[in-house]
Length: 90
Image 1 (spheres, rainbow, N blue to C red):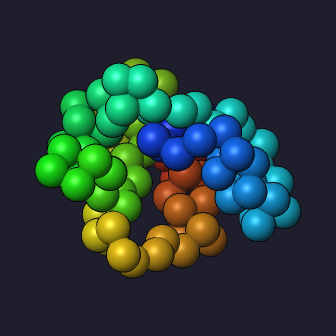
Image 2 (image 1 turned 180 degrees about the vertical axis):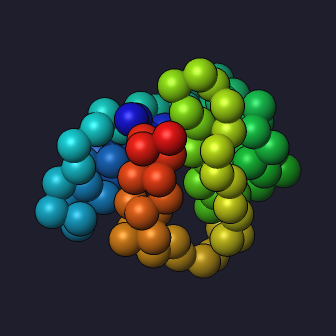
Image 3 (image 1 turned 30 degrees about the vertical axis):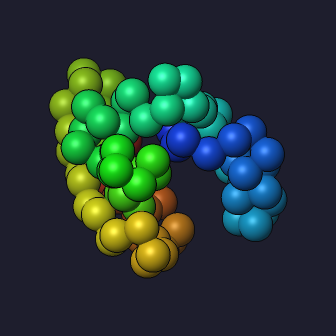
């Protein structure tokens, strides 16, 4: 498992600390900004940001879960962890 966002490494570090740490790598979709997010329809080019979206892709590259809560909303980390566990169990 890994996480990807357009945020900086410093944002990733702070986010991970706020959760008490994470056990997976956090990658930057930084240059060209939002290239990966755009492939999933989550990059809002006119604003230069990504939608607050979560896409869980399995080892075979199949999207198993996708949800968007909008840029101003929040996701529930416990719910996301449950979704990741479902996908990892197959």
